[in-house]
Length: 113
Length: 135
Image 1 (cartoon, rainbow over the protein chains, first blue to last red):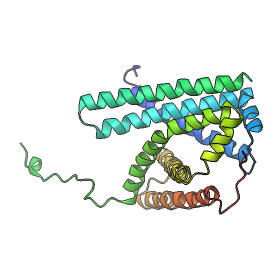
Image 2 (cartoon, chains in turn blue, purple; image 1 turned 180 degrees about the vertical axis):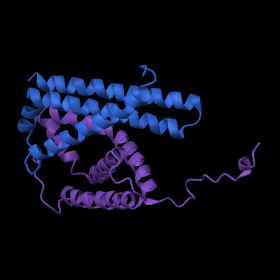
Image 3 (cartoon, rainbow over the protein chains, first blue to last red; image 1 turned 120 degrees about the horizontal axis):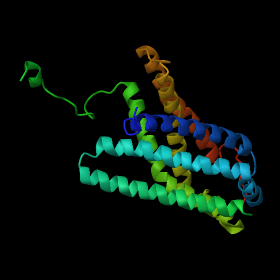
Image 4 (spheres, helix red, strand yellow; image 1 turned 135 degrees about the vertical axis):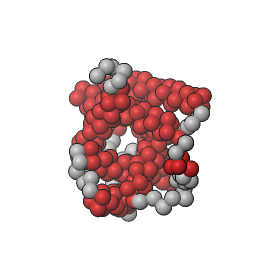
């Protein structure tokens, strides 16, 4: 199958792999923090730990990719006008991109403590 | 033009009585869109909570406001429904629960399960059950 022909399959697979990672991360997160009293120091120290920092970054990027694939499908299904569709998708992609860069900055800053 | 082309088309989704499986499907989309819309707020809170002690306290205070609590409950429902329905869809990918009766029972399980889990989380958020968060 060519790269182009497999784009739907790739989206399908990416949607499921990101979903699995998101759920596993949330389960671990709930296990680590559930019932704990969170303070700034413990929260910041946890995010500064390389393993948590990378896991959190992967979690955020999984969510952004998952949101892109799902949101794109929703827009394509319900927005019939091609121009409105393009505008919406561009705004959506830019929004997710900004959130990605912003999250990267947050986690890099927190990780450099 | 064949005779079948003259059949009436009736696809007003709002007027067709949807089976529960279809309702789960559309709720999966709605909950996904809800979470996408709440995502910028979450990144904002993450940034604030990690910036400094004052920012962290500000998040703790913000989370005590009724508006944020209602949004948090909405997010809990969206997340729970999305995950439960997602698990069901993934099982369907592997032909698990593909029979109509099972698929419908599982769909009801998703609908009810999401509400039950949200009710528990809502009682935590609104302080009916104790939850530890300290500024």
